[in-house]
Image (cartoon, rainbow, N blue to C red):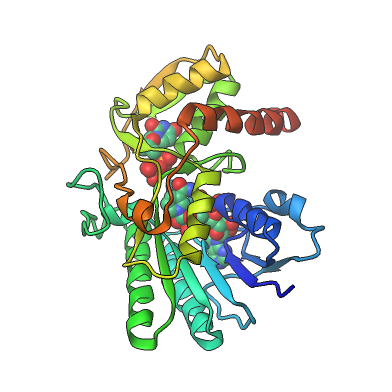
Length: 317
Ligand code: NAD
Ligand code: UDP
């Protein structure tokens, strides 16, 4: 059997570790590359004994030469707390990192998939968001290091296709959650679940009427793989859940599912926080025959035990 050699940059992160695991299950030879900025060894611990898994500690802002057939580029801080920690580095990771991996793809003839984001739509004026919407991004705001970094990464991908014939794929990922999302990166699902389990107040920013559409990680990983495998797609593809919910209703659902007595505490809304977000997934349905299956309630029920175990191993104080 000839195994495909697949590079997963950002493979020690939340989504990346699930992707590595799934690719190994399907018989691939997986190279997981990560600088461990927001990813952890803990995420890939179950994989390190696998004979076709290799971990390379490397920063994508530096070039690297490898023999691979396919590249998934997930290397980028993804949570606002992480990407705003060192905004210049966030831009460098998305621009220079993508450039380096595109150079590699061109050199070895690999197909490359870029993990882009719903943040390319900024605070969208069109709802739900379709791939042909150009977005409403503040180019100088606190989120711009990430949003504009990802927009340049998309431009690089498309121009390497036009200019050099590189086989590129762009996934615009919407809010995704599940086990292994860092408990300290400040994203809403991990924040609320950890706060609920610790009987601490749930920190709803603003009045909680802003919306997101939450996709469970196994569905998202299937979408990434189907996009990579597809013979042809017309351009970027939205991957996410089309079921929208308010942040306040998410908090209430998490309180119900954890049986927590925590209160809800309302705080300041972050600058440029998008008001509404929901993907139109028509393109993924038509071209990839993909749609998410795991509902929010079920996904949370599969996520909460991960944080329960984690907190049991690391009690506060
Ligand atoms: P994550 O922070 O858990 O994973 C990102 C990984 O990239 C981490 O392991 C981190 O250490 C690594 N990384 C960061 N900078 C690097 C560098 N310079 N060199 C090498 N590795 C580097 O976040 P995630 O949620 O798993 O996100 C994965 C990808 O998906 C990111 O590109 C993110 O922008 C994209 N995305 C995620 C979501 C989501 O809701 N989770 C939504 C939209 C887009
Ligand atoms: N949010 C919140 N409390 C938290 C963390 C986040 O109310 O403790 C809100 C945040 O303001 C945003 C939504 O939840 O409106 C999703 O935030 P997250 O950082 O998870 O993702 P993003 O803003 O990138 O979609």
